[in-house]
Image (cartoon, helix red, strand yellow):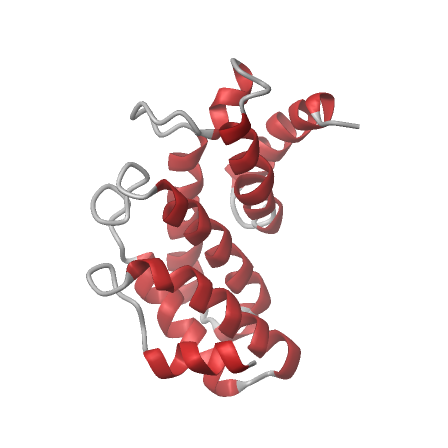
Length: 169
């Protein structure tokens, strides 16, 4: 809870002001809301996720500019949306779902030459970067959003069996 309140005190991260802090702040404050319904943290989550939803994923927050932050933001936005679902109006939910969907589609196959895209499991199933992104970021986000984003279910059906067939025993 301490780190959640530190995130609230630090303020909302923007695309131009400390964007790398947004994902971890979102996760910490969403967890504080989930376990204790901390209203201050809940309001922070709402403001932060809506702010992140406006970020242009082809510019400052692009996969090319910072793939690690891009992946973390995708997962943390999905987790925060799930944990704080009751805080959002229907219009806010649509905005957030669309933002997560855009990131999910971009991460699956960004078509920019990055080597750690999820799609690489199709051609290089033992490549560490693709597997790391698939298991630690992409599939969890897809599973969380499976009832909200049609592509999420398709991605789970496509990639989860592939991962399970190559996963170490």
